[in-house]
Amino acid sequence: MLNICLKSKLLTMIFYTYIMNYCNYNKLTKGYNTLKGVFMKKKVMVAMSGGVDSSVAAVLLKDQGYDICGATLKLFSDEDVLSSCSRYRTCCSLEDVEDARSVCHKLGIEHFVFNFKETFQDEVIQKFKRKYEEGSTPNPCIDCNKYIKFSKLIQRAILMGKDYIATGHYARIEFDNASGRYLLKRAVDLSKDQSYVLYVLTQHDLSRTLFPLGGMLKAEVRKIAEERDLINARKPDSQDICFVRDGDYAGFLENMMGVESKKGNFVDTEGNVIGEHKGIIHYTVGQRKGLGIALGKPVYVIDKNKELNTVTIGSEEELYSKTLKATELNMIAVEKLTTTMKATVKTRYSQKETEALIHPDGEDSIIVEFIHKQRAITPGQAVVFYDGDIVIGGGTII
Image (cartoon, rainbow, N blue to C red; front, side):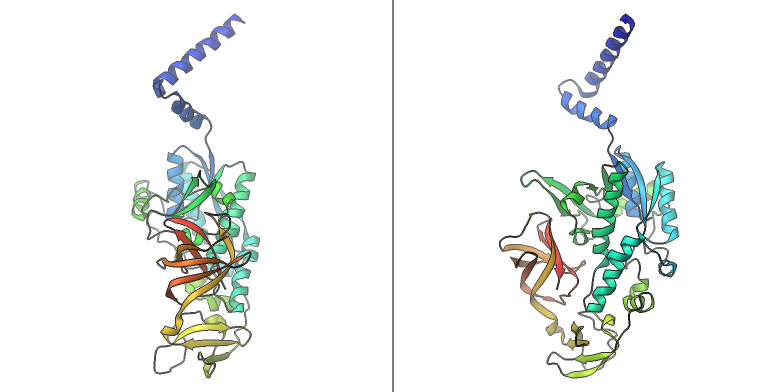
């Protein structure tokens, strides 16, 4: 018993000496928190697409001392869809899975592949098909973020005992003590900012997510990848929808989803028939090229009507609108919009924000009133509103 007591006292003295040397006595609290972090590493599951961004996100988190693993998502069930995705543009090819696995091996971490094909088919591809048939132009990347890359992956991570997931998205998350809410903010690199497609994240999603690249420039990310000799250091970024080849949405819907393109009438803004179209899925608001109609002047798609199977075309001036209505809202910075507020707004991913007034309109809809008319406002796309760098929320244009 005496030997045990002496050993216990000796260990206590050694630990006390270590604390004194490590945190300089006057910073005992800071030293304690640091030691706590050492002995209680947070566990993070990094969503790894095989691209450079998610790979560098994993590198950074490992360097910061997190206990990490990699996870790649298998989203497709049809091999023809898989084969339609090129090597360097998507998150769906076998080569991409191998690139992610290679990076994990280099980092000495576990790599998992999760089969989310059924959810992806139901929540993303089928909705994409349905919305195009209805005459709108959906954004499946937003639906994938909402139903797969965050909600579904967070569920899996929690089941496996992880504290967070992390992705290679360019955006930032902060907790606001005043409001008690997690905030989504634009990335430091505005040319790569992805906050627009992340507006669907819930408070729970944000509380369980890390964005290691949010404060970095893309050039810095590439540099780290090259310095670490990652296999994908020079891999081009993906550009198109991952399950659609070369941006041919109509071809995908016809050939892969069995959608029938029923011919109908082109009409002008007065309702006069001026030609024949090849099916409304072939057109989107603002489109000029590929209309197959010559009127002696530039014309654009102004609207589509599923019930009448018509495509309205007109001048560029007729593309501009002062207002829009949106539904399927998700608010981040505030719990609910109760009064009119001033904000800056985006209606497309690559668009620069513009000033507008946001008016509540019932339980789950808003009216956006722009200070200046906006071009080609497209049903099915997202409208996202900001207060400076902070994402207030967003919804789907109807």
